[in-house]
Amino acid sequence: MREIDRIRGQLRSALEANAWHGPALLEMLSDVAADEARARPSSGVHSIWELVLHITVWVRTGISGTTGKRFDVPDDVDWRAPGEDSRAAWEEAIRDMKEAHRELDEVLSRTKDESLEQEVVGRDYTLYKLLHGVIQHDLYHAGQIALLKKL
Image 1 (tube, rainbow, N blue to C red):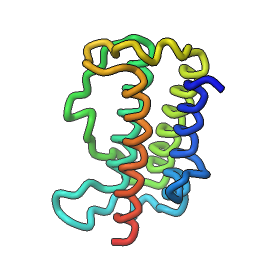
Image 2: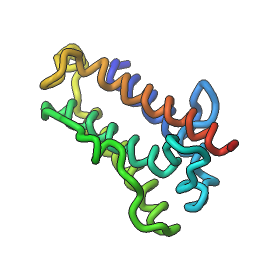
Image 3: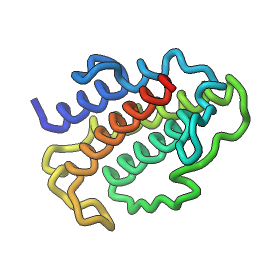
Image 4: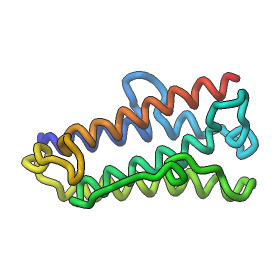
């Protein structure tokens, strides 16, 4: 099996199901309503909705890094507040996150293992590290979402 296919499998597990640690990101979000997603249980804590938007931004950096494009993420893009407060807007945020993951998977399906050792444009790390970072980032924030749901 190609290494890139292993990475794609880990990305899918972190997002969809069969994650080793427990519920995957989408499983964690499946019962979150818009009002719960927007809630901020404590000052200085990001909402679930903000975390979903943030995750989406960083999945897209994985796409940029894989396609050889430089990426910079300004603070106002990295951590942005949800727009419209509605169920439809919340569902759109989830769809956008899923679409970003699907796009990354599609790009990775055409990526050769040899590319994994190349440095990412504008960074001092390889594509291998970036892709594993995207997966770790998904799981890190999935854990935060799990805690926010309990609050």
